[in-house]
Image 1 (cartoon, helix red, strand yellow):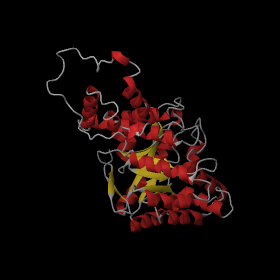
Image 2: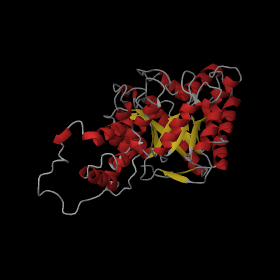
Image 3: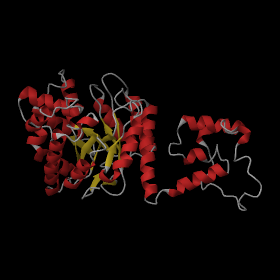
Image 4: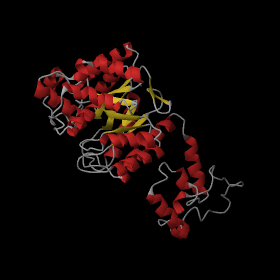
Length: 402
């Protein structure tokens, strides 16, 4: 856990969430791409994410003229804090001006931040992509030898094309002061994160961690607020590096995933949930992975599966500490009372799953398709029943039988 806690304020409704405490903060990334999705589809994902209990939504839209109007709509239709990347905003502003997203000027980094400050509660910046860090990266001998972060890649192109230093690094104080004045929480993006486990915790990633440590201290000194991305693909055998990063950086840490294997294509949401259970004590927040990771734009069902996988991991963390046990007890009671159609679905960690609806209807028609008339719950041996039947501590009303 982080040494300090960051209080993230939702500027639209005044509510606050604490990152760095006992509660894991879950971020759901959504957004348009130049190749897929629509405003309507992304809004549906955001609404589902809120229903399923995520803490923050983060816009990652690229290459679409509707990028800011989507952000404005999300701000009106969700009660959750909203984040976005100032670098991607700069690229989108360049596109609006008829230029390539890699054709960035220094001015656009500031304009991108200012545009997001109108609606966002968290804004991602990348002070770790610098002339020097790119030199370290170039000699790192990585298997995947490109800056894999989309935002980080734009900054790397800016530095190499113009010869200028990254504004987020060079003019960091301006961004901190703006964030402090507007009660915005900064996210330090992990632009040099590893894109495969073989590359994890190499010289480039550890150098990035050193910059995060330095800039975290600047934020603390100015009494501003920040969280940092560090993790992505991580080699689970390198626990000593994870411990060192956690000990040296005082602000809340998180990242995308994390992922402890590279071969779970199509199942990376499970990969991430399992990895998270391994390293939870070092992680304060996570950005959700869906089954579409490394493949393409996630569908609504992909989003649901990704969020649910993380919610399962999060629930198990609580159980391990003796918390969250009431719902598990309710599910056991519902099963005992054969409350398959009214009872079990409402208690499930994702009560909106179509599969639950499908099987609930089958059971209503004639019992479980595995057991049929052999179902143990329908054939209790005499003398084994409780004298006083237990009932689920829920109200009737099955949303799945409509």
